[in-house]
Image 1: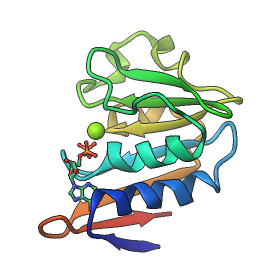
Image 2: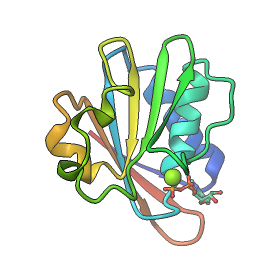
Image 3: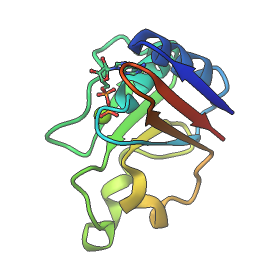
Image 4: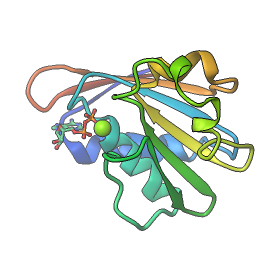
Length: 135
Ligand code: ADP
Ligand code: MG
């Protein structure tokens, strides 16, 4: 499905609707260029999952763990070019059967991700417009 949004709040709302379809163990890959709105969409999803702490892109770590109604993880692997060169357990803290995980810049981790349940792709569509493709 492809949706168009014209403001950050609309992209958050797409994330909220996505959250309603998720269950523990789900791994959601969120692709798109810098500034596309990946973190914005994940913020909306986290809010809907009961996360009350601020949801921003992790800067000094590869991920954050939040406490919502279920455990929620938010990974940003932008600086991780090749997970093959990293400790294989690097992602273990963030994934698991009880966790809903969102992963920005998932390319480096894809070979290592056994259970990807959703893929979202966000594209710039001029100005504040975004095209959000979900599968
Ligand atoms: P990413 O995580 O993909 O790098 P962010 O979500 O951090 O992107 O930032 C998206 C930026 O684009 C924010 O500054 C946000 O305010 C702005 N923006 C403008 N229009 C939209 C929109 N329709 N959807 C999402 N973000 C938008
Ligand atoms: Mg981001």
